[in-house]
Image (cartoon, rainbow, N blue to C red):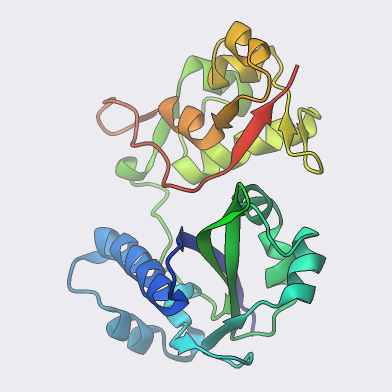
Length: 246
C-alpha cells in the first residue's frame, strides 16, 4: 500500500506542540469548508481508518524518536541532506521538501524550524502517511474552486481555469524551464512575460535586491470563475520571498 507525502508550515511559537495543533486546525478548517462543520479530527481518523488522511491530521503527538503516528525532530543530518543547511528558509522548504519526505518510512513525520533573516519564523511538519483518499481533494468540476488567469498570467501559464495552487505551480515551472530562477542563489530574473505578472519591468529591474512575494502577485492575477469577482485573498503568511536581480 502506498502513502501520501505532505508538508505544512505554520507560524513559529516557542512550543512546537502548539504549532502542531495550529497546523491541524488549519487543515481541519479546509476540510470543513468542503464537507461541513460537523467534521472533526477524530471523525476523519475513524472514517479513514488505516488508510489515514494523508495530512498532518495523521500525527497524534510529538516524539523524540520516529515512530508511526508521531512527529519527531528532523535532525541536523536530514536537514543538511534535504536543504543543504540546518536553517532552511521557507523558499528552500517549498522547493525541496519532497526530498525529506521521500526519506521517511510510511507513517512517519518530522518537524523542524524554518528561518527568515537568521531567526526562526515558522515550524514545518513533513510526513509520509496514509493514502489520503478524497479527504482533501478539491472537486475539479466545482466552479467555486476554479480561478481564471488574467491575460498577463495566461501568457505564462495558459488560460485554462485552475485552482490557486495549480496556478502557482505552473508559474514556478515556467520560471525554472526558462532559466529565470536560480535555486542555489535564490535569485529571480523575470523575462518580459513574467515581469507583467510580477510588476512593472522598470520597477523590477530598478530595485536591486527588492523583496518580491511571488504568491501574492500570482494570486492577484486570478479571478473566481463562479462570479468573475475580485481576485482571491493574498497567500498565507510565510510563502516564498525572492530577491530580484538585474
